[in-house]
Structure formats: C-alpha cells, structure tokens
Length: 282
Length: 256
Image (cartoon, rainbow over all chains, first blue to last red; front, side, top):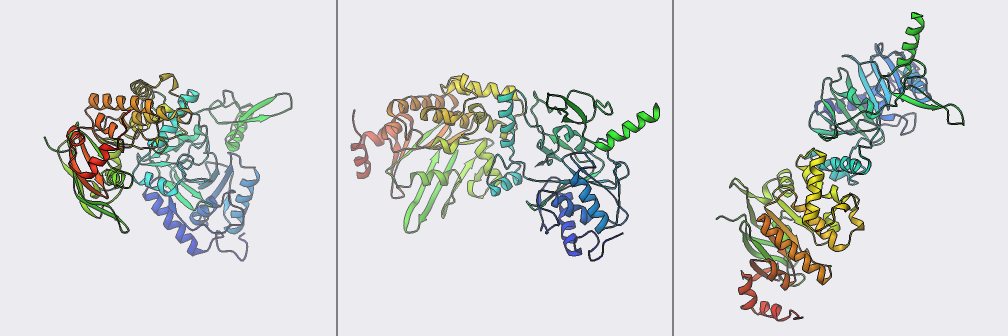
C-alpha cells in the first residue's frame, strides 16, 4: 500500500527523468562518472542517498526489491531502505537474491550469481578512484579524459615494495571496458571478479559527490595488477561457522573477551539458504 | 641532419614587459644547447614555451618525431603533448620537489614514467629502477626510501633518473644545479655530461652559471630582455664575446 502524499518512488517525475538521462549516459560510457543533481533525501548523506535516488528512478510497480548492507538483509540500513520503498512505491520486497529484480547494495555483491534482467544498485561514498593520489579534481578529470592512469599503478607498486603484495582489501580499483578507471565502491576485493562480464546491469550512485556511473551487462571489469603480481582476491581462511561454505566471503565476529571469534557468511540470504537446504537433507 | 626542435619568431609579453622578443632556435639530435642570461631575461619563459607548457603570442615551435614527421608543439592537442612529455621528452625542474613525488619511494618515482607508458611487470620495473639508481650514483639499497629523506643533490639526481628512464630524445633542464653547493654541483654536472654522451641526448639547458654552460654545452644562446643578443659555439662565445652584454657576463665570472 503506497503512502499518500508522495509521488511513486518518492522522487518527483522531473528529477527521475534527469537521473535517468544521467543513467543512460553512464551506461553508454561504461565507468565514466556522470554528474547529476542529487536531491534532498529523507536520510543523511553517507547512508545511501545516491543509491536510493538511482533505485527510485529505475523502480517500477512490478519490481521486487532486495536491499543489503554489508551482505546482510537484516541490518538497520537495509531494513529501513526496504521499508521506505515498500511505503513510497508500494513494491514487493524480498530477501532472496534470485527473486529480486532490483538489488540495492552497500559494500557487497551477493554470492548467488546474478542473471540478465536484474539491476544491482551500489551506494557509493567516493566515486573518484584517484582522489587519494591526486587531490585536484580538475586534474583527475584530465587524467580520465586522457586515460593517464600511471599514477594508480605507482600506488600498487608502492604497496608491493612495502608489503610484498597489493595491500588494498576493499575498493580495489578496476578498469572498465579497457578504458575508464573506476572505483567499485567499497566492496571487498573478493567481489571484484564477480563484476567482470556480469549478466546483470550495475548502477552506481554517489549522493554526496553527485556522480552516477554504470557497468552495462557483459562488460569487462579488470582489477589492476602487475604481470608478475596478479590480482588475488582475499578471503579469511576458514569455513562459515553456520553453513560450512568455503567459497563465500566471511565476516569475523568476536564472541567473547578472551580472543574467541567465529567466521560467518556476510551474505545472510546465501547462508540461510544453505542452512535450510542442509536441514532439509537431514 | 635535420633539427629535432625548431622555433621561429617566438614572442610573448607579460603586460608591458617583453619576455620573448622574436626568438628563434634550432636544436639538433645529440646536441646540448645552453641558454644563459641574468634573472628576468626570459630564459625560463623560453624553456616553458619550447616545451609546450606555455603558449607564445607569435611564432611557432616544431618538433620532429623519430619517423621524421614535423609537429607543431602548440597545436598537437593535450593528449599528444602529454604523450610526448612522458616518452620522447623530459623536463628537469630546478627544484626537485617540482619534478618528484615526495610521498612516493625512489623506485616508484623512477617507475612512474615506465608505468605511464604501459610497463606492467613489477620485477622489470624494479630492476630498471635499481639500474638507474646506480647510474645516477645513488645507493640502490635506498630504492624504497622516500625522496624527502634524500639530500638536495640526491633528489636532483633522482629527478634526472626518473626523467631519463624512458630514454627520451630531448630533455629540457631548468637550472639543474641551482641551489646545490659547489662540490655537489661539480659532480652533478659531470654525471649529466656522461649521461648525455652515453644516451646521445639532445638537451636544452637554462642556466645563469657560465662555468656549467662551458662544461656541458656545445652551443650557447645569450639572452637579455627577451632577446637573443648573441649565439654560437660555446667556446667561441665565451672566449671571444662580441656583444657588450656577453662581455660583461663573461667578465663577471669569479675565478677561483
């Protein structure tokens, strides 16, 4: 049941149209950051305003929405955003990756492979992958325009010289379609390979920085590396304590004050499905 | 042999002050050309115009690529100019802090140009950095050291290594020995001379140090108030100065 007094999906139609135009441009130039006019949202910047604006612009009455925060469906942020869209758009929501048509995510890609027709919307705090290396925005734009990305490799070189390996565990820079350097938003490097040639459409919204970018289906997304130091996704070396998975990305949970800890899947839907399947088998 | 770099009729004014007044210049492959003159004579401005960093009001600068094609430096577009600056050309700044990344290790500084032109093999980049540190007489054990912890002379040598690592054909140097003490200057000049001869570099060097010019340069241009008042072979100009300003300049050199 849609709340009264709001336009469908909270944003007004003109704003949606403006954001859709930015999205079309972003899809046409994969990995390129397109500016858009971020609107005031009923939650503060940094809580997913960019992602919500994008979701609000692409959602339709027939969509089924899933929202995750660090892979979990049941955290405050995920629950609030899901409830928000249930209220202002009257859409169905779900926790099942396979059943959702739109998945808004903060900092994870679901373990279950996505398929054609699904849209993955990322919440992005900082869209510029070069911002720690080059403080001048005008200069970073020029570097993107000229595909002048030597500086990013200098950063990787420095990591290997200092630590023996590339010490970036999340927000690991990628090259999209062989052209644009892109920040994958702070997903773990473990998730980077899932972006490459993904059948689903990936949209990125940065509310505070007012940038939208996109990766169309089946676009190549390569993590930067060296020939003799190839990209290696990191994962805690343990099975999930709840479902036993050795493939999924794990969260480390401290369980007492004596150094006790356990590793569990960060993707709650994936973990629950596996646990249910195991119980059914027993 | 045809010139690597040709400039003709360059003119540029800063308000009422003429910084360049009808300056023409040719640089041939493997040749070192020094531009001397007092502060404010337009030396550095000329270097900036020649290297495409500044646009002149009149005149043009043409660069001949290895295939023999001539390019107008100021009309080639930013992307082409950048490519030139990180492959065929190099620029050594007076202050090494302008040419180095102070928060990146010595090895990373040398490797940056290699990576910018597509080197993607860590081991090879590192080996190249090691080799270049030796060539500029820096202890290779300091490959992971920060330039901020290097002495002024070492920083300047590191900047030279970083510039030469992609084997440019033409290098612009803006007072490379400025701000260094005399013994360090002498070693640096010696090193630059050896590298230039080894690599067959063409160099345009700006300096107010007549002794440095005599040591390095094949040809000399003397500038005053934006004009080239005298030019010729270094020894000829310094031993037999024709223009009164050159005579004054040569007479002002302190003999130790």
